[in-house]
Image 1 (spheres, helix red, strand yellow):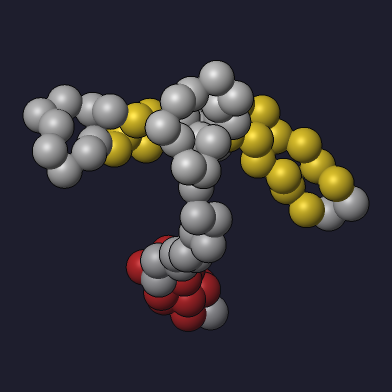
Image 2 (tube, rainbow, N blue to C red):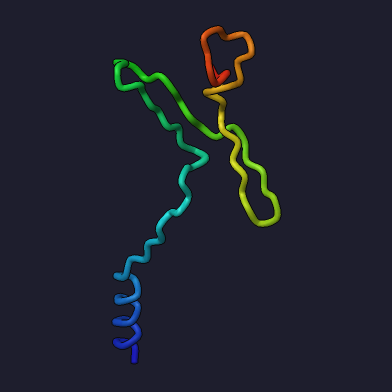
Length: 79
């Protein structure tokens, strides 16, 4: 009986259970991007804060684009 328990325990420990992370972003990570013509990082996206609404997590990102009211020659009013 002890051998059977030992074998079952060894089989249980040898099975690795992995779950896939389905979150598109991780709140502890920083994501760096660059424009294809640049040699350096041009944008950094990270989560500033997290709010729980009902059972959902709402992530607030740092802003890399904002409305630009004073920009000239800008059709979409973005900077």
